Every structure is written in structure tokens, then in C-alpha cells.
Length: 453
Image (cartoon, rainbow, N blue to C red; front, side, top):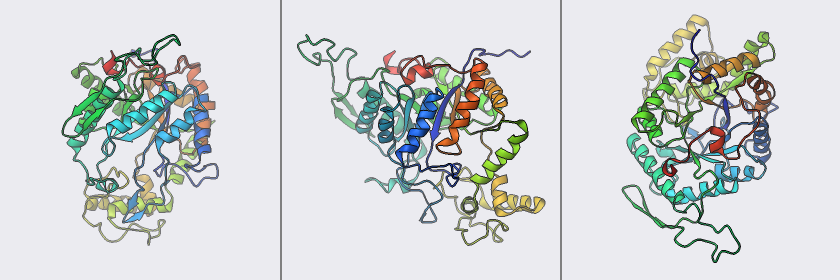
């Protein structure tokens, strides 16, 4: 029998409402607006009922575009994540609140203060998914415009986090008076001015907010390149990875992160890994395949298929029938637009088109069917018992510490997970039965912040 390296490990769950995507079946009758507060209220209260660690929001600094038009297949107009989470803090007690915030087009003094404010009003439940942006079209929103190359983005991001941590550490542990008999509300010399000057930032500020119950907001990171992994090993406390479907790939990624942590002088369990994933549940095994297929085909509407295939062909294909054949002409040999974070970016579009035509001819597939069949499958499908067994295997063999779930229906997509899957995990001793702390850092089992050890 194979040894289980982490026999007592438990599954951690977060929920990720990414907003802009084609995986959310927004046209389904059970789906609701992803702008209205009620949608977020329903989703987060369900997640907290299910004892989730965190509620995680994506960020959009600009409406997404394709071929010079607003991409209206995506959910547009997302409210600011920190504003949303601050409102949600008031109706929840335990669940963590993670805001995706950009280090390329923010400034550390302002963002650190807003994150610190969220951490304080929530009682120590804030997290920051620190991301970079590589496209010039977002940069057009900002005075300096343009974009930074890959290495500079991470260089700026690392410096950004270092400055933020300096600001969060500027108040001493016992800065605020604990007795009404104290002579002053703030102890003498309890707050220091932070001065930082470098290529990217010039900061001279006395921070206005004390630390929260968890010390600092928890730092999440989502890059998967070699540079991104090194960045995580140096700065992150949680990694939101893309390895949430295939066990071997997830284990290889986790082992690589553990190696990089040791090289950075940190314990190899100093980062929690929570890959993004989708979970499709059916009550009976005989129903799994049909339900999983319904989800997949609902995610790939005709318009979505035309949009995705249009990225390869380099032009607007809205004049075509998605249930007809692929375009007869070859793609325009240009770099595929990154407007939607296309995973095929940089590949030869002509070669892709030839592969797809061969597939379509061999299996008599329409354009839409080709888009479906060549898509990357995500996550897990099965009965609650089957999925519980698999998720338990992942965490107890060190492939991950849990999962950041992207529901395919919002806000109802968590109901089956909370009502069916969580009890199965609890029966296996692989999921908490109650919250034992009040901070996000405690839920995740993290050490104190790197600068506070």
C-alpha cells in the first residue's frame, strides 16, 4: 500500500467569482446579475455556511475588447473588489475576503491603505491577490499608459509588496491605548514614517491605520511562469494556481514550489496552494456524464465559439454560422489577441487551423463543436462521494491544500457543493466541521507575516 504523506490533511475551499469569463452560464434562468449586491450576498453566505476559507473576487480595470468592440459575451461592469468586500464584511463573521488588485497600475501607499482598511473592518479577514498586467490596452486608462515587460512587471510587483509591508509594519504592536486612564490615545513614537525611494516608487508617508488581528492581509499570487513561481516563493503566502484538473501536473507544481521555497530560505510548507477548479456534481453515477456535457455545451454558446475561434483566425467571425464549418480561408498570421488572456497566445494560428480542420473532417464537427472539443477541460465531475474521494487524495498526497472553486452558475452554483460535497468530506475527516478562528490567516493555517516573525 502506498504511503500517504499527509494522512490528516483537510481540504480548504475558496470561491472565485471571476466576473469576466465564458465559463459562467450567465444566460441560465437560475443565474443572476453579477453586479447586484444580492448576488454577492447569496454567494458569500452560502460559502460561509459551507465553512469556506475565503471569498475571492477578480478585477477588471477596463471592459474587455475584441476586434475593437466591447466583448459583450463577457460579464461587464464589475464593481471594485475592495468596495464589494467591505460591504460583505458587514454581513459575514468568519469567511476571508480576497481582493484581486493590480501592482502594475496602482500605487502602494493608496492600495496598502485600502487593503488595511478592509482588514480592519473585517476583523482580520482580508487577502490580496497581487497580480500584474501585461497589456497596453489597460495601460491606456492611466497617465503613463503603455505596459511593462514581463521581468519589470514582477520587479515592480515585488517592490510594491515590500513597500506595502513596510507601511503595515509602521504601527507598533501596542500603539493604541488599552485603558481609558492612559494619558494619550496613541503611545509616543508608536508610528513611524516610511520613506522609500527607488526606480519604481517614491514614498514618504506616515501610515494612518494600525494592524488588524491577523497582522497583515494575506498575500495571494497567481503567476505560473518560472519568474512567477520565484516571485511566489519570495513573497506569497497562498498560490492561486491553474493546476486544478490533473493530479500529476498539480503534484509536480507543488513539488517545484516546495523546492523554490527552500531555496528562498523559507519552510517548504510556508505557502498554501489553492488551484482554481470547477466541480460538477450529480446525485447518481449514471447522471454524471450527461450533466458534465450540459455544463460544457452551455458554456460554449454559438457566439462564444465564434469569439474564441476568431482569436485564432485574427478576425471577427460573427458573420459565420457557429453550427457550420470552420472558415475556409487561413488565419491572418498575426499574434493572437491577449484581450481575453487567450491560452493559445504566441502559437502559430495557421498550424492550429490545420489541426482543427483535420479534427473537424475526421469527426464531422461544426465550428462550435471544434471549439468545445479543443477546449481545456477543467476540474472534477462525479457523484459527491466520488469527488470527495478524489479531493481527499489530492490534499493527502501533497498535490494541493485545497481548491478555489469557480461556480458555473452564480450565485446558485455553490449550493450542491455545500449541501452534498462538504458532508462527504466531513465524513472522511477531510474538512472542518466548524470555524475555530476568526481570521483568514488562521483558517489557512498560516504563520505570521514574513516581516513579523
